[in-house]
Length: 232
Image (cartoon, rainbow, N blue to C red; front, side, top):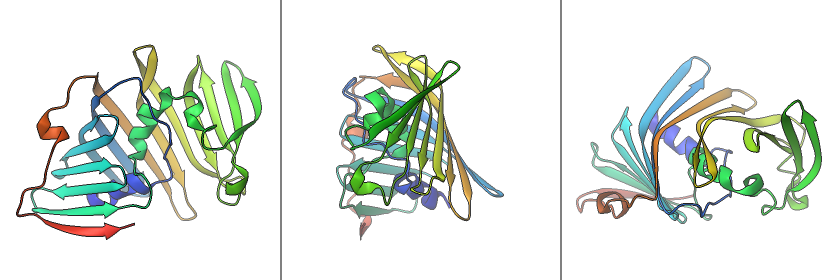
């Protein structure tokens, strides 16, 4: 089940095209809990990011390393001595981690993606900004709602063209680095026709701008490892 969950976090709809130049590297511990109906699964590990490459080292419940760079995802199962290399037609990201580092970009980079502001509403101390999708994507995407409190994003909601909520995400426990704020707790609820999936991410001990070791940043598969090639 762990393999399905890790792939799900890559291909899930929660993906921001935002990118930050506020730091050169980040390393952070994470715990990711996914709940669906009666099932629950927890993953613990460490994420390393250098602005171009994302490395995820999972320690629990399995020993796994995942490297995302450009349009390639490499997944290495050390105990099983095998690996999968996935080639995508588009650049790949780790969606739940993008939700952590992407919040420093103004409006999550929505304007860059072709979204336009439809209206603003103030409810108490929270500002809700309603964004319309680009014309060429209206058959696939609906309204995107951004909620801000004290100039920090506290909630996002992505809707389908028919107005139904697809994903709702809340952001809490912000820390400050270089005049920017990063959420250490992110909770998303994904709605589908058959299921409701809840994903909770807790980050700990983030370190910014520390050089990554060669063992992490320049990792190469052992020579005897068979690699399954997949195109997506």
